[in-house]
Amino acid sequence: MSDADELMTARNLFQELFPICRSITGDGVRQTLRKISEIMPLNIKEYPSGTKVADWTIPPEWRVRDAYVADTTGRRLIDFQANNIHLISYSTNINAEMSFDELAPHLHTHPHHKNAIPYRTAYYQREWGFCLSEDDLALFDPTQRYRVVIDTDLFPGFLTLADTVLPGEEKSEYLISTYCCHPSLANDNLSGVILTALLYNRLAKRRNRYSYRFVICPETIGAITYLVKHPEEMKRVKGGFVVTCVAGPGPLSFKCSHKGNDDLDRATRMMFRDQGIPLMEYPFSIHGSDERQYSPRPLQIPIVSICRDKYYEYSQYHTSLDNLDFVSAENLLTSLEAHVAVIEMLENNHFPLSKGAYEPCLSAHNIQLPPGGMMHPDKNKSQQIDSNALLWTSFFADGQHDILSIAEETQLPFDQIVRAVNQLKSFNWLE
Ligand code: ZN
Image (cartoon, rainbow, N blue to C red):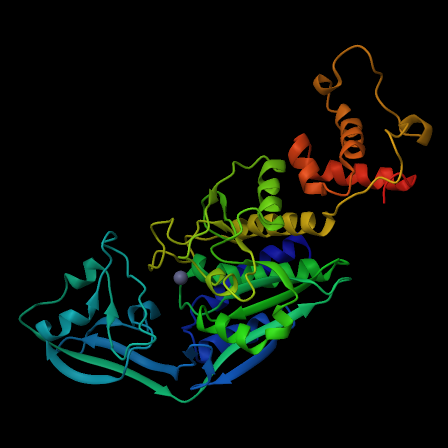
């Protein structure tokens, strides 16, 4: 896929997938996964409602045909067909006329945005409700009666998720996980699904040292189900990314893993440093996404998230303002590049060990150094950097320092240390 193709694919997927009403189960998830399976190979897996997964039980499947609140003339004041986040996800069935006072406890508005519909769920409660803007709420007359219709089913069905593995030279894996349970919300979480599909295609084009396991599942219950149903496979996972909130207008940021200084954290910080992007780092927090499922016992997988407008941090989060106007395919591609750059570092990171003793005589191996003598080499021009990288790399090549730590200690770009390692390997000074 060329750059232009990636941009076009991201734009098309945003347009096609945004209107779909997704939840933690149901046809919205299936439709989304089917569409994504046109871009990347996916094994679509279904687990029946009622299945015990650790301390959880897979809930009934939720299906929605229509939902609205209408006045006595039949005019719809809240209409699921106009925006699917009006209906609280997993709302139960109702068809009744009621007073405004009876209706009001079931209406939810946003505390800050007068013109935004908030996004709410009730997966495990048996209740019903609508979300609407303060502006729309003002259209209700407290003296009138209203017809409330929620035409939904909760029935024994399935939880649907998907995975695929891109094999590398090593069996150990990195996990790329994203969730697919939000209805018409763009940055959280549709952008993560789209980036995951593009990232698969990027990695599929190259020879990889590590294997990559891609998981697209409903948040929380999907990740728990995946872990419970793939215990042996998940033991091979040494770290991963939860891909979410990657296409907003804000700067790149990242949430570090629960370990705080895993290779993943260090590579991500290095990506910010080497690309000259101001580091915006969030500490690990228990509030977030599926890192909360992947990172505890027994597997304790370190997970990072690289975001543009991370959940909780933008005011449009979980509202109707997180829509196609808020995100862009261009922003998504910058996040894609950031993920690829971090993966590139993980792929290239290892512990070089010198075979030779003392400093190598670079000129004896046809490596041209700039003329010495006139000034302190560290203060010399950019051409100096390669020779510095060679000297520092041979200095630190003790089998204890990995490439990331040499780049950290020397402040030299990671890529230059990789080039230096390759040069020193070319005359067998390094292994
Ligand atoms: Zn969310």
